[in-house]
Amino acid sequence: MTDADRTKEQLISELAEMRRRIAELGESERKYRLITENTSDYISLITLKGIYTYVSPSVRQLGYEPEELLGKSGLDMVHPDDRKRLIPLLTTYARMKIRDLLRLKKQNIFEQISFRFSNKSGRWHYMEATVNLIDAPDGKGTDILLTSRDVTEHRRLQGELQESEARLRTILNSMPTGIMVIDAETHRIVDVNPVAIETFGAPREQIIGSVCHQYVCPAEKGHCPVTDLGEIVDNSEWVLLNADGKSVPILKSVVSVMLNKRKHLIEGFIDITRRKEAEEALEEKSRELEAASQAKSEFLASMSHELRTPLNAVIGFSELMLDGVPGEINDEQRDCLSDILSSGQHLLTLINDTLDLSKVEAGKIEFRLENLDLVDVINRTASTVKPMLDDKRHTLEVSVEEGLPQVHADENRLRQILLNLLSNAIKFTPPGGKLAIKASRKGDWCQVSVVDNGLGIKKEDQERIFEVFTQAEALPDESRKGTGLGLTLTRQFVEAGGGRIWVESEYGKGSEFIFTLPLVTK
Image (cartoon, rainbow, N blue to C red; front, side):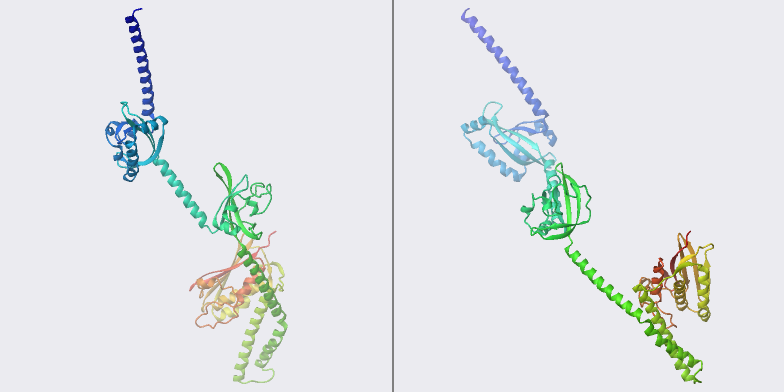
């Protein structure tokens, strides 16, 4: 083979090798182009002076066409505050010696930077980027490969999360109740608020990581009422042990939540030490008041004979003298005796009412319950007050539901109830008034009403009308007669029989006193 032939073969081989390398480069360029054109990251080449020489198509997401950025400075789209940070970096690269640039490229040393970049509409996007030094495409000099990622949405979500966490932390720290977050599996405390720290009496770093039973509802693991026994804790009273071993009564609630894919318990509690002390003091005071009230009632009940005997004598002798039994009396003496008799009778009524009320409160008054015909009791009571009705020219209408069953009550107390209500209706109704007694069935109860068209009762007085020594407003031509105990006794008698009593009234238009009695059912 001649030298010419050998040279020819060598040229053919070198040409084939060159074609192979060109094909490989083409394939490699095709792959890299597919990557750069299909990634969401922004890939660009810039000179050491910041001029774009290549921009990936993904820049269209920011409103730019790749071609319109070529030849322009990337710093022009960077926020002024961030530009001040990036210029020194470019300046450092631009001033490096060639051997230092070659070292950085060979070692593939890169830097992480962040900056704000403007889209075509002028809105700022937050970018995080990687800076690598590579050979320029023309093989002359060095360019910067900048791979940027838009983290605007991530930063927004991160900001919202941080804001939410800060808001929740503020709420947690501001709550007046103690709050603990407990890992349901390990029973260890993972977070507490200031109120819980103060109640425990231990530093936060000592509490975090501790088993919750060390402080709240002390128990061994395996006996926790929430995690082990499956009990629901909602506003239940428990005991807390503080760092000094002192028992603190608390009211607590527990809810279960999932945090970081693990079951946790949010436990809220309130220190009820003061409430417990107040309750104990109140109970003691109540016992003292009850004992005093009982002693008062027993004393008044025991004075019945001593008070009534001399008063009955005064009333009896006054009546005898008025009847002229001891001898004739003049008009002036008659007036004086009439005043004595009237005052004595009024005082006796007051004593009787007071003693009756005291007996009820002391539990010493007897109620003889029996089955009664309500119509008969009403008619006999109406006959008793007829002189009072006639004296004021009142009319009384009785209306009882047909077929009404018997009622179960004490006859004397029922008559006293009706008599008290009718007497009030007569007294507080102007002459010529209209009164009524109504009775009807309401389920297993009989509802009785005493109605008048008299003065009525003001709204603010209706709540206290049944209190001791409380009287309604009198008519202009009436004195405030009575003891102020009639309605109090009436309520006591009604409630002792199992019923209830209330009033419905419109001031200036009349009143309706309503009470209930149990019906006799087979």
